[in-house]
Image (cartoon, rainbow, N blue to C red; front, side, top):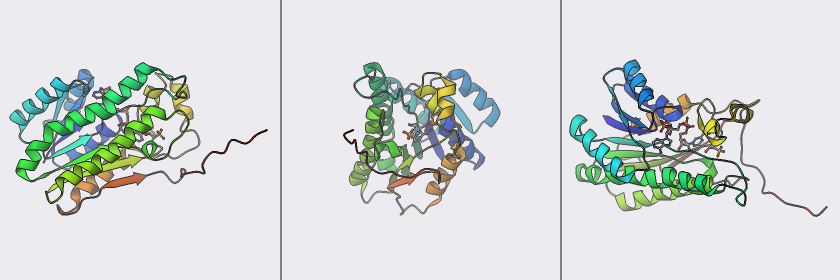
Length: 249
Ligand code: NDP
Ligand code: 8X3
């Protein structure tokens, strides 16, 4: 298969790209950091093609997807993984620029990439899309404001895609992980403050990028008539908690 993975320069995207290349697929990996893509291509060999791409740039997404399909062939699978959280401030203190960046990347970028592959998949009556949602899209937490809302979009968009695709062999799944370690996610959220990022995982055994890669492997190994709509996954050290109650003192 030819699989396009967005955000393949780090974290889940990189682990997914490595796993799929190891399984014999052709993988186009995208990201903004061209030098990282070149290193990964050198490591993974000719089955990995790196393409610099900022998913927030609508025209660039259309051009890169068209070019890569011309060069490598139709995209059979898309992993919409590029995404980020920025800040953990309460909504009244949060940065509007951070909110814009999260909406542009996690919602608009994902929509642009999806739009770029859908017509071809429907015409071929074959294909699959895996979207990276989050437990933050279902369970609110203080400071999760816009990040969680973007992931709620990913969940609902995934289901609505299937509503349009009913009867077609084009599958869509939203993978919604909770606490995951070993990626750049929290360092990005805390704007490079690695001490603050490390604290998130102190004393825990979080989900790893390899766990995510194996989940994608399992999903795409299923027979074509099986669509898994959503997968919510947490490490055993995490579970949904009670609703907050603020009591008078
Ligand atoms: P990382 O920060 O490790 O990786 C994020 C990837 O997204 C990088 O490759 C980055 O590449 C890419 N990216 C970010 N912005 C853009 C952009 N504008 N255009 C193109 N690529 C972009 O994060 P994770 O691997 O942890 O997270 C991956 C996905 O999983 C995200 O959608 C995240 O929200 C979601 N998720 C993460 C969880 C976690 O706890 N880690 C849990 C649940 C969901 P580059 O900088 O080179 O552009
Ligand atoms: C990442 C998981 O709980 O940090 O989506 O929002 S969380």
